[in-house]
Image (tube, helix red, strand yellow):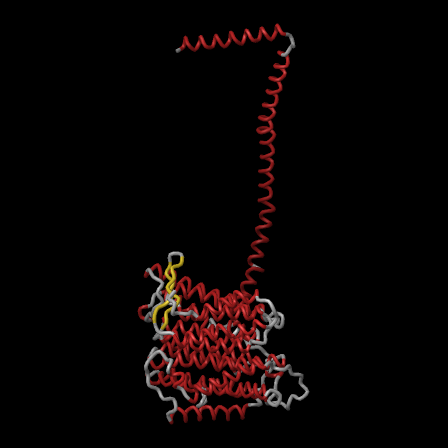
Length: 595
């Protein structure tokens, strides 16, 4: 490996390996931010190029493809990893930190992978690390184990799609190169790979794992998961499948579908999970449209989304940590008890809603403007409508029912929030505002040269009017939108239906077939087996026993004859010797005569 290239994966993997064996109860916590700090230094100082070619079992793996596209994702991954480990600094369970390190290391490996084989290895490492962030919450959450299993099954299916696609592609073209492919030139194996990435991107129909699993993860684990899984998928789609019309329409569908279900949910972390799907939809749509403007918008929105979505999960995680619940019908009246958490959430809510002076505005408007600029008005209108639903559910509904809507919860028992959680939320809040006020801080990392000014009068006026009328609509409907104790089911219904159909087939048709075969075996098969046993017994008595008994009888007769010859008289034995010698001599003579 080239000496000038430090792969960020190394630090996280090393910490994951040594952390379980470190003695002591708390000093090792100070090691947690070090891999992320090293990653920040690395990605901010790397020059574009190809690094780290490794020969492995006859395959050539390229673990360090560095360009502007990979760097913008690695940049925000490193920053969010540092924020995430600060947020999790108070945890004493090393297992959570190990899982997070494996997860983050896999994400960096995917972003810097120059070939499909390297990408697949790190893709699976990412999947294994992330599932433990769900399972490790099983002691506190009865749904975590099942949700983790379903999460792992979904990502196993996605991994198998990618594996099948890359193997078929290798057979067809003879290499593992991870390069762009146009939709018009795509083969069936390219579609397999794309849908494998689509599982992690939460395509409609393939998305059910996201709102099912993320709300059941640990408080800190959900912060990590909100940043890496879907955004690595966005990176791979941007790298290999830009300009696919399928992605453009899928992305807008995701944006609308996510906000639709988010408005009906009661669990705050489930609301945020649906909004991951929705916001990733903007990125997928931008990739599908495929212009320099929309690709920049997709990358910028991925960067901004990681920061504000992490802040949303940190704020709601602080509520869950402090109050023991994330259900809106059980919260309320907390603005006086948790004012700093409220402020952090409001910053994140304004950012995701696309209010001017927050980072969501300077990224989301680029994608929408790019859609209209490319004369894709239908797609642009769809994304504008999704922005309305975003502000309605995450920007207003969630904070209103979590912090206001009820009298001050003075009597409510609240667990103190550790200082490190406040610090992490403060850093994220600062970055969301900083990028919103000075968008060039974000735009300088974009992969393509495009001139875009987000603070034009039309852009600002449009956003303010649209979101203001959305706020007015919520005020009018606030009594109708009161959250209730429920958990909505979307495409999970089809999975449940399929599971019940499978159980029905096992319980009734298969059970009937098994009963029928058992009866046939009892009446026919058992009789046949008895006949075979009788034949075996007859053969044993007449064949094997006769042969054995014959050999024994012959041996006994020979022995009896030999016993009679043993008289004990010397002259008899001499006679036998003379007869034996005569016989031998006669035999020799006969042979000589014959020859």
